[in-house]
Length: 434
Image 1 (cartoon, helix red, strand yellow):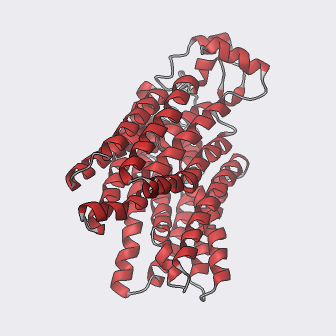
Image 2 (cartoon, helix red, strand yellow; image 1 turned 135 degrees about the vertical axis):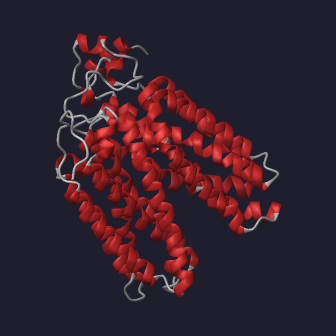
Protein backbone atom coordinates (compact mmCIF):
# COMPACT_ATOMS: atom_id res chain seq x y z
CA UNK A 1 0.00 0.00 0.00
CA UNK A 2 1.74 3.17 -1.21
CA UNK A 3 1.20 6.69 0.01
CA UNK A 4 -0.78 7.68 -3.09
CA UNK A 5 -3.35 4.91 -2.70
CA UNK A 6 -3.67 5.67 0.99
CA UNK A 7 -4.15 9.36 0.27
CA UNK A 8 -6.79 8.61 -2.36
CA UNK A 9 -8.64 6.33 0.04
CA UNK A 10 -8.50 9.04 2.69
CA UNK A 11 -10.15 11.56 0.38
CA UNK A 12 -12.96 9.12 -0.42
CA UNK A 13 -13.60 8.09 3.16
CA UNK A 14 -14.58 10.10 6.17
CA UNK A 15 -12.48 7.84 8.41
CA UNK A 16 -9.05 9.29 9.07
CA UNK A 17 -6.35 6.68 8.36
CA UNK A 18 -4.85 7.38 11.78
CA UNK A 19 -7.72 5.50 13.39
CA UNK A 20 -6.52 2.34 11.65
CA UNK A 21 -3.19 3.03 13.33
CA UNK A 22 -5.02 3.27 16.66
CA UNK A 23 -6.55 -0.17 15.99
CA UNK A 24 -3.15 -1.74 15.47
CA UNK A 25 -1.85 -0.09 18.64
CA UNK A 26 -4.85 -1.54 20.51
CA UNK A 27 -3.86 -5.04 19.34
CA UNK A 28 -0.23 -4.55 20.33
CA UNK A 29 -1.11 -3.33 23.84
CA UNK A 30 -3.60 -6.21 24.14
CA UNK A 31 -0.68 -8.63 23.85
CA UNK A 32 1.79 -6.39 25.69
CA UNK A 33 -0.39 -6.48 28.81
CA UNK A 34 -2.36 -9.70 28.42
CA UNK A 35 0.60 -11.96 27.70
CA UNK A 36 3.33 -9.79 29.16
CA UNK A 37 2.25 -9.48 32.79
CA UNK A 38 -1.48 -10.12 33.36
CA UNK A 39 -1.14 -13.83 32.51
CA UNK A 40 2.02 -14.51 34.47
CA UNK A 41 0.30 -15.40 37.76
CA UNK A 42 -1.42 -18.28 35.94
CA UNK A 43 1.93 -20.02 35.52
CA UNK A 44 3.17 -19.71 39.11
CA UNK A 45 1.63 -22.91 40.52
CA UNK A 46 2.34 -25.07 37.43
CA UNK A 47 5.99 -24.04 37.57
CA UNK A 48 6.13 -24.70 41.31
CA UNK A 49 4.61 -28.14 40.85
CA UNK A 50 6.86 -29.19 37.98
CA UNK A 51 10.22 -27.81 39.10
CA UNK A 52 9.82 -27.39 42.86
CA UNK A 53 10.74 -23.71 42.69
CA UNK A 54 9.63 -21.50 45.56
CA UNK A 55 7.05 -18.78 45.02
CA UNK A 56 9.70 -16.15 45.68
CA UNK A 57 11.95 -17.66 42.98
CA UNK A 58 9.12 -17.67 40.43
CA UNK A 59 7.92 -14.18 41.40
CA UNK A 60 11.42 -12.75 40.99
CA UNK A 61 10.89 -13.26 37.26
CA UNK A 62 8.41 -10.38 37.16
CA UNK A 63 10.80 -8.14 39.07
CA UNK A 64 13.43 -8.85 36.41
CA UNK A 65 10.83 -8.25 33.70
CA UNK A 66 9.68 -4.86 35.01
CA UNK A 67 13.24 -3.75 35.72
CA UNK A 68 14.38 -4.53 32.17
CA UNK A 69 11.34 -2.92 30.51
CA UNK A 70 11.97 0.26 32.46
CA UNK A 71 15.71 0.18 31.80
CA UNK A 72 15.39 -0.15 28.03
CA UNK A 73 12.62 2.44 27.62
CA UNK A 74 14.98 5.33 26.76
CA UNK A 75 16.74 3.09 24.21
CA UNK A 76 13.40 2.11 22.64
CA UNK A 77 12.49 5.79 22.43
CA UNK A 78 15.78 6.59 20.69
CA UNK A 79 15.31 3.72 18.22
CA UNK A 80 11.80 4.94 17.40
CA UNK A 81 13.23 8.40 16.80
CA UNK A 82 16.00 7.05 14.54
CA UNK A 83 14.29 4.24 12.60
CA UNK A 84 10.58 4.93 12.99
CA UNK A 85 8.07 3.12 15.26
CA UNK A 86 6.98 0.66 12.53
CA UNK A 87 10.31 -1.16 12.36
CA UNK A 88 10.63 -1.28 16.15
CA UNK A 89 7.10 -2.68 16.47
CA UNK A 90 7.61 -5.33 13.79
CA UNK A 91 10.86 -6.70 15.19
CA UNK A 92 9.51 -6.35 18.74
CA UNK A 93 6.50 -8.52 17.89
CA UNK A 94 8.66 -11.01 16.01
CA UNK A 95 11.11 -11.35 18.91
CA UNK A 96 8.43 -11.50 21.58
CA UNK A 97 6.59 -14.33 19.85
CA UNK A 98 9.83 -16.28 19.47
CA UNK A 99 10.72 -15.78 23.15
CA UNK A 100 7.33 -17.01 24.36
CA UNK A 101 7.89 -20.19 22.37
CA UNK A 102 11.38 -20.50 23.87
CA UNK A 103 9.89 -20.35 27.38
CA UNK A 104 8.17 -23.67 26.67
CA UNK A 105 11.63 -25.30 26.59
CA UNK A 106 12.41 -24.23 30.17
CA UNK A 107 14.40 -26.78 32.19
CA UNK A 108 16.14 -24.56 34.73
CA UNK A 109 15.42 -21.43 36.73
CA UNK A 110 18.39 -19.59 35.23
CA UNK A 111 17.11 -20.27 31.70
CA UNK A 112 13.66 -19.01 32.73
CA UNK A 113 15.11 -15.76 34.08
CA UNK A 114 17.25 -15.14 30.99
CA UNK A 115 14.43 -15.77 28.52
CA UNK A 116 12.09 -13.48 30.45
CA UNK A 117 14.75 -10.76 30.46
CA UNK A 118 14.91 -11.07 26.66
CA UNK A 119 11.09 -11.04 26.51
CA UNK A 120 11.15 -7.77 28.43
CA UNK A 121 13.54 -6.29 25.87
CA UNK A 122 11.53 -7.50 22.88
CA UNK A 123 8.07 -6.73 24.21
CA UNK A 124 9.14 -3.15 24.92
CA UNK A 125 9.08 -2.78 21.13
CA UNK A 126 5.28 -3.12 21.14
CA UNK A 127 4.69 -1.32 24.43
CA UNK A 128 3.84 2.15 25.66
CA UNK A 129 6.85 4.02 24.26
CA UNK A 130 6.58 3.01 20.57
CA UNK A 131 2.77 3.12 20.63
CA UNK A 132 2.73 6.62 22.13
CA UNK A 133 5.51 7.78 19.79
CA UNK A 134 3.52 6.60 16.79
CA UNK A 135 0.22 8.12 17.89
CA UNK A 136 1.89 11.41 18.81
CA UNK A 137 2.94 11.72 15.16
CA UNK A 138 -0.53 10.95 13.81
CA UNK A 139 -2.62 13.05 16.21
CA UNK A 140 -2.41 16.50 17.77
CA UNK A 141 -5.83 17.92 18.58
CA UNK A 142 -7.27 14.41 19.11
CA UNK A 143 -4.17 12.88 20.65
CA UNK A 144 -5.81 12.24 24.02
CA UNK A 145 -8.73 10.38 22.49
CA UNK A 146 -6.42 8.33 20.25
CA UNK A 147 -4.04 7.31 23.03
CA UNK A 148 -6.92 6.64 25.44
CA UNK A 149 -8.65 4.38 22.92
CA UNK A 150 -5.46 2.46 22.07
CA UNK A 151 -4.57 2.03 25.73
CA UNK A 152 -7.88 0.27 26.39
CA UNK A 153 -6.07 -2.67 24.81
CA UNK A 154 -4.18 -3.02 28.11
CA UNK A 155 -7.39 -3.60 30.06
CA UNK A 156 -8.98 -5.81 27.40
CA UNK A 157 -5.81 -7.90 27.30
CA UNK A 158 -6.14 -8.55 31.01
CA UNK A 159 -9.85 -9.29 30.77
CA UNK A 160 -9.76 -11.57 27.70
CA UNK A 161 -6.31 -13.03 27.08
CA UNK A 162 -5.58 -14.07 30.67
CA UNK A 163 -8.69 -16.34 30.90
CA UNK A 164 -7.82 -17.91 27.51
CA UNK A 165 -4.28 -18.62 28.71
CA UNK A 166 -5.73 -20.06 31.93
CA UNK A 167 -7.95 -22.40 29.90
CA UNK A 168 -5.01 -23.50 27.74
CA UNK A 169 -2.93 -24.22 30.84
CA UNK A 170 -5.64 -26.28 32.58
CA UNK A 171 -6.81 -28.06 29.42
CA UNK A 172 -3.34 -28.88 28.10
CA UNK A 173 -0.22 -27.64 29.96
CA UNK A 174 1.72 -24.45 30.64
CA UNK A 175 4.11 -25.11 27.74
CA UNK A 176 1.21 -25.17 25.28
CA UNK A 177 -0.07 -21.89 26.68
CA UNK A 178 3.27 -20.18 26.06
CA UNK A 179 3.41 -21.54 22.49
CA UNK A 180 -0.16 -20.32 21.97
CA UNK A 181 0.78 -16.80 23.13
CA UNK A 182 3.78 -16.68 20.79
CA UNK A 183 1.99 -17.94 17.69
CA UNK A 184 -1.17 -15.87 18.25
CA UNK A 185 0.98 -12.74 18.61
CA UNK A 186 2.66 -13.52 15.29
CA UNK A 187 -0.64 -14.21 13.52
CA UNK A 188 -2.44 -11.07 14.71
CA UNK A 189 0.33 -8.51 15.16
CA UNK A 190 2.88 -9.06 12.38
CA UNK A 191 0.53 -8.74 9.36
CA UNK A 192 -1.27 -5.70 10.79
CA UNK A 193 2.00 -3.91 11.56
CA UNK A 194 3.41 -4.70 8.12
CA UNK A 195 0.28 -3.76 6.14
CA UNK A 196 -1.23 -0.90 8.13
CA UNK A 197 1.35 0.94 10.24
CA UNK A 198 3.04 3.97 8.74
CA UNK A 199 5.55 5.70 10.98
CA UNK A 200 4.58 9.17 9.79
CA UNK A 201 1.35 10.60 8.30
CA UNK A 202 3.39 12.03 5.44
CA UNK A 203 3.99 8.45 4.30
CA UNK A 204 0.25 8.34 3.59
CA UNK A 205 0.13 11.82 2.03
CA UNK A 206 -1.54 13.23 5.15
CA UNK A 207 -0.99 15.61 8.01
CA UNK A 208 -1.75 14.83 11.69
CA UNK A 209 -5.47 14.63 12.54
CA UNK A 210 -6.37 13.99 8.90
CA UNK A 211 -5.59 17.34 7.31
CA UNK A 212 -4.81 17.09 3.64
CA UNK A 213 -1.10 17.35 2.91
CA UNK A 214 0.40 19.61 0.29
CA UNK A 215 2.69 18.06 -2.37
CA UNK A 216 5.67 19.72 -0.70
CA UNK A 217 4.75 18.11 2.63
CA UNK A 218 4.42 14.64 1.10
CA UNK A 219 7.55 14.90 -1.02
CA UNK A 220 9.61 15.76 2.04
CA UNK A 221 8.68 12.49 3.72
CA UNK A 222 11.71 10.61 4.99
CA UNK A 223 9.96 7.28 5.44
CA UNK A 224 9.26 7.88 9.09
CA UNK A 225 12.85 7.27 10.09
CA UNK A 226 13.25 10.63 11.77
CA UNK A 227 11.07 13.19 13.45
CA UNK A 228 9.29 15.48 10.96
CA UNK A 229 11.48 18.32 9.65
CA UNK A 230 11.39 21.20 10.00
CA UNK A 231 10.31 20.92 13.59
CA UNK A 232 7.38 23.02 14.74
CA UNK A 233 8.69 26.02 16.66
CA UNK A 234 7.06 24.94 19.91
CA UNK A 235 8.80 21.55 20.00
CA UNK A 236 11.62 21.12 22.50
CA UNK A 237 14.97 19.50 21.64
CA UNK A 238 15.95 16.60 23.86
CA UNK A 239 18.59 18.11 26.15
CA UNK A 240 16.77 21.35 27.01
CA UNK A 241 13.59 19.34 27.63
CA UNK A 242 15.31 16.95 30.05
CA UNK A 243 16.86 19.92 31.91
CA UNK A 244 13.64 21.90 32.16
CA UNK A 245 11.67 22.59 35.32
CA UNK A 246 8.55 21.17 33.67
CA UNK A 247 10.19 17.80 33.02
CA UNK A 248 11.51 17.57 36.57
CA UNK A 249 8.05 18.05 38.06
CA UNK A 250 6.36 15.81 35.49
CA UNK A 251 8.88 13.13 36.45
CA UNK A 252 8.08 13.58 40.14
CA UNK A 253 4.37 13.34 39.34
CA UNK A 254 4.69 10.11 37.39
CA UNK A 255 6.99 8.60 39.99
CA UNK A 256 4.63 9.21 42.91
CA UNK A 257 1.34 8.29 41.23
CA UNK A 258 2.50 4.87 39.89
CA UNK A 259 4.15 4.12 43.23
CA UNK A 260 0.85 4.64 45.03
CA UNK A 261 -1.17 2.88 42.34
CA UNK A 262 0.90 -0.29 42.19
CA UNK A 263 1.27 -0.31 45.97
CA UNK A 264 -2.50 -0.68 46.16
CA UNK A 265 -3.17 -2.76 43.05
CA UNK A 266 -0.52 -5.45 43.56
CA UNK A 267 -1.87 -6.11 47.06
CA UNK A 268 -5.55 -5.60 46.30
CA UNK A 269 -6.66 -9.22 46.74
CA UNK A 270 -5.27 -9.63 50.29
CA UNK A 271 -6.37 -6.06 51.08
CA UNK A 272 -9.97 -6.91 50.21
CA UNK A 273 -9.87 -10.35 51.80
CA UNK A 274 -8.75 -8.71 55.05
CA UNK A 275 -12.16 -7.01 54.97
CA UNK A 276 -13.84 -10.42 55.27
CA UNK A 277 -14.42 -10.90 51.53
CA UNK A 278 -13.97 -14.32 49.90
CA UNK A 279 -11.11 -15.06 47.52
CA UNK A 280 -13.59 -15.44 44.63
CA UNK A 281 -15.11 -12.02 45.28
CA UNK A 282 -11.66 -10.47 45.61
CA UNK A 283 -10.68 -11.95 42.23
CA UNK A 284 -13.90 -10.60 40.70
CA UNK A 285 -13.09 -7.16 42.09
CA UNK A 286 -9.65 -7.36 40.45
CA UNK A 287 -11.24 -8.08 37.08
CA UNK A 288 -13.75 -5.25 37.47
CA UNK A 289 -10.95 -2.86 38.41
CA UNK A 290 -9.30 -3.67 35.08
CA UNK A 291 -12.59 -3.02 33.28
CA UNK A 292 -13.11 0.32 35.02
CA UNK A 293 -9.49 1.16 34.21
CA UNK A 294 -10.25 0.69 30.51
CA UNK A 295 -13.15 3.15 30.75
CA UNK A 296 -10.91 5.58 32.63
CA UNK A 297 -8.25 5.41 29.92
CA UNK A 298 -10.76 6.45 27.28
CA UNK A 299 -12.48 9.19 29.32
CA UNK A 300 -9.32 10.79 30.71
CA UNK A 301 -7.77 10.73 27.24
CA UNK A 302 -10.76 12.54 25.75
CA UNK A 303 -10.96 15.00 28.65
CA UNK A 304 -7.33 16.01 28.14
CA UNK A 305 -8.16 17.16 24.60
CA UNK A 306 -10.62 19.81 25.79
CA UNK A 307 -9.87 20.62 29.45
CA UNK A 308 -6.75 22.07 31.16
CA UNK A 309 -4.32 19.19 31.59
CA UNK A 310 -3.43 20.00 35.21
CA UNK A 311 -7.05 19.71 36.32
CA UNK A 312 -7.57 16.46 34.41
CA UNK A 313 -4.50 14.99 36.15
CA UNK A 314 -5.69 16.31 39.52
CA UNK A 315 -9.06 14.60 39.00
CA UNK A 316 -7.32 11.34 38.06
CA UNK A 317 -5.07 11.30 41.14
CA UNK A 318 -7.81 12.65 43.40
CA UNK A 319 -10.22 9.85 42.45
CA UNK A 320 -7.57 7.25 43.29
CA UNK A 321 -6.86 8.90 46.62
CA UNK A 322 -10.61 8.90 47.33
CA UNK A 323 -10.79 5.22 46.40
CA UNK A 324 -8.01 4.36 48.85
CA UNK A 325 -9.74 6.45 51.53
CA UNK A 326 -12.91 4.39 50.96
CA UNK A 327 -10.85 1.23 51.40
CA UNK A 328 -9.72 2.56 54.78
CA UNK A 329 -13.37 2.78 55.88
CA UNK A 330 -15.37 0.23 57.86
CA UNK A 331 -15.74 -3.34 56.56
CA UNK A 332 -18.61 -3.26 54.09
CA UNK A 333 -19.22 -4.99 50.77
CA UNK A 334 -20.91 -1.82 49.52
CA UNK A 335 -17.75 0.18 50.23
CA UNK A 336 -15.67 -2.48 48.48
CA UNK A 337 -17.65 -2.07 45.25
CA UNK A 338 -17.57 1.70 45.61
CA UNK A 339 -13.79 1.49 45.93
CA UNK A 340 -13.65 -0.68 42.77
CA UNK A 341 -15.63 1.90 40.79
CA UNK A 342 -13.82 5.02 42.02
CA UNK A 343 -10.25 3.71 42.21
CA UNK A 344 -10.55 1.63 39.03
CA UNK A 345 -11.81 4.53 36.94
CA UNK A 346 -9.12 6.90 38.25
CA UNK A 347 -6.42 4.25 37.87
CA UNK A 348 -6.96 4.08 34.12
CA UNK A 349 -5.78 7.64 33.63
CA UNK A 350 -2.24 7.38 34.97
CA UNK A 351 -0.62 5.48 32.10
CA UNK A 352 -2.53 7.57 29.54
CA UNK A 353 -1.69 10.97 31.01
CA UNK A 354 2.08 10.52 31.05
CA UNK A 355 2.57 10.45 27.25
CA UNK A 356 -0.03 13.20 26.89
CA UNK A 357 1.95 15.35 29.32
CA UNK A 358 5.15 14.81 27.31
CA UNK A 359 3.38 15.71 24.08
CA UNK A 360 1.67 18.81 25.48
CA UNK A 361 4.80 20.19 27.15
CA UNK A 362 7.52 19.23 24.67
CA UNK A 363 5.97 18.32 21.29
CA UNK A 364 6.99 15.39 19.09
CA UNK A 365 10.54 16.19 17.94
CA UNK A 366 12.19 14.23 20.79
CA UNK A 367 8.98 12.62 22.07
CA UNK A 368 10.16 8.99 22.04
CA UNK A 369 13.34 9.54 24.04
CA UNK A 370 11.73 11.93 26.52
CA UNK A 371 8.89 9.48 27.11
CA UNK A 372 11.41 6.63 27.41
CA UNK A 373 13.24 8.44 30.22
CA UNK A 374 9.92 9.26 31.87
CA UNK A 375 8.74 5.66 31.59
CA UNK A 376 11.93 4.46 33.28
CA UNK A 377 11.06 6.64 36.29
CA UNK A 378 7.45 5.45 36.08
CA UNK A 379 8.55 1.79 36.20
CA UNK A 380 10.88 2.50 39.12
CA UNK A 381 8.05 4.09 41.10
CA UNK A 382 5.71 1.20 40.34
CA UNK A 383 8.21 -1.43 41.46
CA UNK A 384 9.01 0.46 44.68
CA UNK A 385 5.31 0.86 45.48
CA UNK A 386 4.57 -2.86 45.22
CA UNK A 387 7.49 -3.69 47.50
CA UNK A 388 6.65 -0.89 49.95
CA UNK A 389 3.17 -2.27 50.61
CA UNK A 390 4.58 -5.68 51.48
CA UNK A 391 7.33 -4.25 53.67
CA UNK A 392 4.92 -2.05 55.65
CA UNK A 393 2.53 -4.97 56.14
CA UNK A 394 5.32 -7.30 57.29
CA UNK A 395 6.64 -4.62 59.66
CA UNK A 396 3.38 -3.40 61.20
CA UNK A 397 0.99 -6.25 60.47
CA UNK A 398 -1.55 -3.92 58.83
CA UNK A 399 -2.04 -2.38 55.38
CA UNK A 400 -3.60 0.80 56.80
CA UNK A 401 -0.23 2.50 57.26
CA UNK A 402 0.60 1.79 53.61
CA UNK A 403 -2.78 3.04 52.40
CA UNK A 404 -2.41 6.28 54.35
CA UNK A 405 1.05 6.77 52.83
CA UNK A 406 -0.32 6.26 49.33
CA UNK A 407 -3.08 8.84 49.84
CA UNK A 408 -0.38 11.36 50.73
CA UNK A 409 1.57 10.37 47.60
CA UNK A 410 -1.44 11.02 45.40
CA UNK A 411 -1.89 14.44 46.98
CA UNK A 412 1.80 15.19 46.43
CA UNK A 413 1.41 14.14 42.78
CA UNK A 414 -1.39 16.69 42.37
CA UNK A 415 0.84 19.42 43.78
CA UNK A 416 3.79 18.44 41.57
CA UNK A 417 1.83 18.51 38.29
CA UNK A 418 0.77 22.09 39.05
CA UNK A 419 4.40 22.97 39.87
CA UNK A 420 5.29 21.89 36.32
CA UNK A 421 3.66 25.09 35.12
CA UNK A 422 1.92 25.50 31.80
CA UNK A 423 3.20 24.22 28.43
CA UNK A 424 5.20 26.88 26.59
CA UNK A 425 7.00 27.04 23.22
CA UNK A 426 10.71 26.31 23.25
CA UNK A 427 12.92 29.38 23.11
CA UNK A 428 16.41 28.70 21.64
CA UNK A 429 19.03 28.88 24.35
CA UNK A 430 16.54 28.03 27.08
CA UNK A 431 18.00 25.66 29.64
CA UNK A 432 17.36 24.72 33.21
CA UNK A 433 14.54 26.67 34.79
CA UNK A 434 14.95 27.72 38.40
